[in-house]
Amino acid sequence: MDCRLAYRANGARMHTESLYRVALTMVPNIGPVQAKLLTDTLGSATDIFRARQQTLESIEGIGSVKASCIRKFNSFNLAEDELRFAEKFGVQLLFLTDENYPKRLLHCYDPPTLLYYRGEADLNHPRMLSVIGTRNKTDYGKQLTEQLVRELCSQNITVVSGLALGIDAVAHKTCVKSSKPTVAVVGHGLDNIYPPEHRPLARDICRSGGGMLTEFRSNTRPDRHHFPLRNRIVAGISDATIVVETDVKGGSMITASLANSYNRDVFAYPGKTTDTKSAGCNQLIRNNRAVLVTSANEILDSLGWIPQQKPVSTQTSLFVALNEEEKKIVQLLAVGSVHIDTLRLQSGISAAAFATALLQLELKAVITTMPGNMYKLL
Image (cartoon, rainbow, N blue to C red; front, side, top):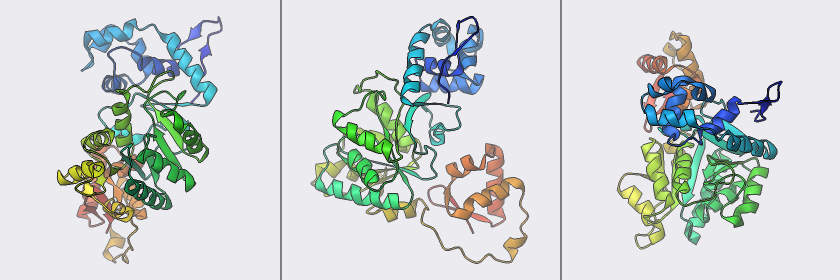
């Protein structure tokens, strides 16, 4: 995206779409939920700021107070500063409607309005898993994480974590050592790294084809209340979340809860009943908030990501008549089992047509459903 400011012939500064996008995140009383409502209704940040008061008020969930906040906003100079920062340091600005915006986040009720991204990793990679855990890791947790991440990397899976001390750092470092991309989601601006001792790790992540991602603009400090917001991105950007080691309180439990609320699968490694560092994992498993796993292979099998030997097609299947939507879905399933959300996004078919096509393919005995909202060819 071109983040440079445009100017009119007479020298007056023009408010570009990029400028309006940054500005939208600065408007008081307009959070991610309201911004999505506005964008879904009006289409662009430019249209939002140029809309009349009455038009804004008429949008459900906005009302007169929020509409006035948009109309009266005049701190565009701060948005200009952010665009200059992004251009200088090669930071991508990913808005809700951008093609490169992480599509999985759009299935969450509160997707970040604007993301700041520096790196090369594909945020819409077909297979993404979040690996998280306690900051106060044990040797047991460290060994589990290293083994898990090595196996995930060998299966071309992009690992996401939060760049925190402990399990997060082990996950990122293992990806770097494996020369595989990893995405670090942080709770502050990209002009800063927290904790400070992870600055070399952040550089290594970017150099190894990974990336740094945040919804916070530059000069935003790593305040305590930012990390639950960071955690929702960790939970929402992946197909599933894996909790390696955690106490009953802390960021990992928040992330697991958010993943559940987003209808994402959650997996947890069990630990000794006397080990407080595994008490959170044991609680998640006990309360059916996470699936007990002991290896990467079990996770991949549960997600339907282990290639299955395809049986020889039957004679009747050769003569099944398929329409264009059905053919698209069949082609996508040729690689193996695919989650329904991924299948819907990759097909590009409207929700109604997609649902109809799935039903028809099941009735024609071309596809079948599997646990975890997975589909595969018969």
